[in-house]
Image (cartoon, rainbow over the protein chains, first blue to last red):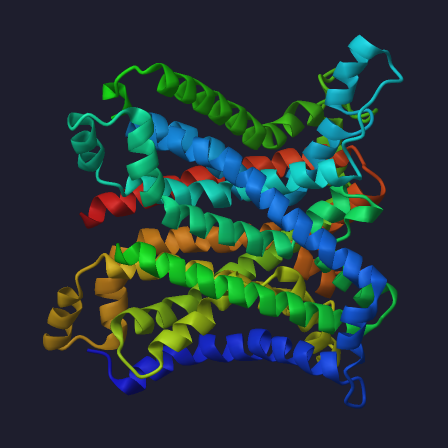
Length: 273
Length: 272
């Protein structure tokens, strides 16, 4: 019913805004990364030669992969638990996943600082047993970053896994059971393999989100936990080296786009099934 | 289904431990969002849990200190304008993408949805460079435009899914009977996708209201939003007022979360 002309007119305003305030700024970063008045590859050379950047890249990948694996280990049993509930009880438990999902990351980081800090809840509690001077450092270090990241990432892991668990035909499990398969075998040969599309989507989503993480390492991490996003901020604001900031941003952008393309493909296949 | 499983020892162990992991997981998820509530009523002294006394002092501080309340007003303003602009842009575009057929449709829809997948820090840097060259860094307009780009994909996803659930035959019938585009949209399409538009608008408002990274890059001293103020407050001073702000933000999230779940349920119910 839509003519080409009206389709064009309906799409024009949004397309124009996205072109000017999304595509153009991304292009500007690419341009800045190779040109600071004259054409140069200095920014990208620094990516490979600077010791600081090498350490930050290593941090970023270690933290992203570690946080994603912890999030998967914790998220899968939660998704299983949700999938097994009656619809009414599931709605209730879902609030426990959706409320944190919609809570500002600043609120969660602030709360975790109160829980994990040197005078925080956990250390106060431990102090009752081991004396007031005793404390376990859990903030401004890797522990704090992992706790904060996993807390942020979990809903993004649980939701796609839950979707793929819920879309499984219960008749398959019932048939396997009638034919004598034990619960462990049913899980390993039916439930788990059929949920892998959800696992894949959750893992990719987690990795994409954690590679670009800025708030958590800034608030809960220490000097040794600086990630790529923090480094972009540092070069933009502190040293005003926009070229180097842009070169790092372009690398982060390229990695994210590649992972997002995989995510799109894994979702497409999931939808086709 | 699992109640029918044979009670084998191994699976019982797994189910117990799996259930235990799930319970620990729920606590871990929900604890940070709710622990700020009691602390926010503990008064101006050191942040303690459980609080030693009950007081509204921190809320009074929040609503009377212009450094806090002013940023909250700014965030409300930015989020409201962003929501309006995003819905006005996304509704027609979603309609064209769902109902229309044209070459390059697939590519265009990926491009229009792609702001979801780009790290915010990258977009923040790009917009900072862009607005700096235009000379509008730090203006409310630049914040609204940046947030509009950011939230529009979420509005589009919501409205598109609403459109896919309604029968296009009704629109065809209206066209045959001579209704114009605008009549069809407001008379036929809009009443059926009201809930999807509302969900999209709620997404847009909450994402804009909570957004910190892009705003941190492009807002100025006069246009600072609440999350930016809160970020620097957590980073540099740990002012107890943050506990009150956090509680208000959690309450806002809870209201939005319940409203979205309710609207989505209603939407599914009416379309079947």
